[in-house]
Image (cartoon, rainbow, N blue to C red):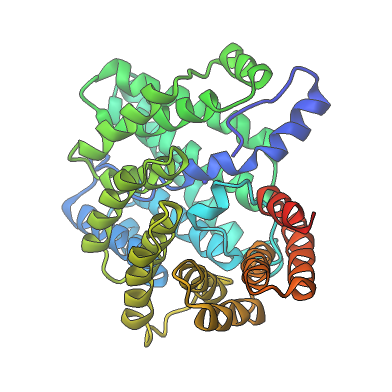
Length: 410
């Protein structure tokens, strides 16, 4: 959700620093899964609404089919093409296992998931749908350059391109340019029609991201046209979440991430409560609820979410996100460790390590096992676990956890 920033004034240093900052665009990746009407016919609108619900319920294949049916119902519906592109992009990122809040709290950017290159046919289909979305919207703009909704459609499609370029292709500079264009388009929407609070979602997200940059990068972002302001950015996203638009869910998802970053855990949990009620088939929402309460220091509450998730989705035969099972076991093992359930915690953490997953998940599991070994007085085992934690987390760009494990070793 990654690159709406240029980090210094020398070109080579700028590109290198933007690569380190990659996770930021993925925040924006969460905020354009659904789309506004764009004057589509009723059949297309209905199919898009169904597809959006399917995406958030993790029924991605069904969503892809629904978007294709929406396009067939109205070939001039820009939002339907963008919805299809979004569903295809999510099918790629799902394979990489980088769709959780944890990924963007500690700058975890690398992956040991399946090959980074997406299937060629999926990549081709993504760009075909995205380019058609832009072509339809830009053609409409020729006849009415001050049409707010058309500017919205263009900006949302360009934001999706920025997310794809950053997360799938790893091209920081290309993502930066697209992000700037998306920001401008949605500022234009607000200028034309200030009532369109939904347009504040992308603008507010980029404002928040810019505010978090180091000073040289922040100054450069201002020079090239980005606005800043953390509080203003969050406020704009909150307004979008309260606005009865089709991207209301997207705003709620963005707020879950940003509230976690701000340590506003109860606010994040309120959004997650709404999302769980709206999308009861999305098991990741139960995982995120458990993760948020763990960050808030409430392991008992976390256990309730995680146990409910384990029970609720035990027979869910749909494809798993890469490393998802390892993540579930790691989270439950951590909660059990916090509750003093040592034996059960060790079992869960051992399962997390033995299951395919991201290196940072395995590394953090080793860290928890190291802490349990220290508590039991087994320093030799603790050292082995902590050394593994350092190596795995450093390999997956989880510097904070590696530093914590190194500190315990010393």
